Length: 230
Image (cartoon, rainbow, N blue to C red):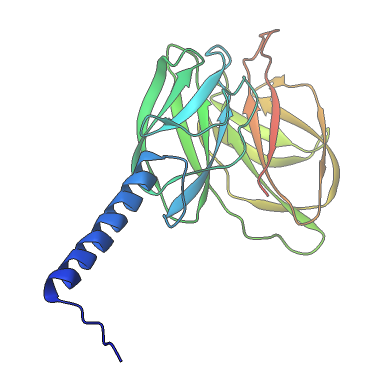
């Protein structure tokens, strides 16, 4: 019976090959910024609320994190990005940087980043999206004021009923639970009230409602935006 033996030199050689394989695999993952296998990541949604910046893409560490550029009033939906303290930016369709900042993204946490303001004063507003389910037969709603012409704004759910009052520009309210059902939403700033937008809040769902547009502007009027977070 022949017995195979492994020399010390062979052990060293095999170990070196294993290490090299791990390094190459790690390098491949690092070189593919859209491969999140085995990595810690967060989820980021991007909403473009700048009335005059044009379409924009959202970048983290100079890597596009939106499948395509996002038009005014639209959202990208959630996309994965690496967790940690990151450089973030919004860029035009021609990849010119519109605004840049930094943001902390925690592991397995959902965020929405708004492109806010007009071209002379653009900003990136990051908010954390709470995914905790509402009570039975309820929806969960919060309100963000992204209208650059509204120093404060209130959200009304009917002709006379207010849900959130006097939310400052670039500020976000706490979440509130509402009965599932249909609502006529409008935003109010001073004596300026937007046209009503019909919305149905479904049971168990979470919504971000935001004021957008410019008071008195016919092209991008003061109005209501809605994003479903789950």
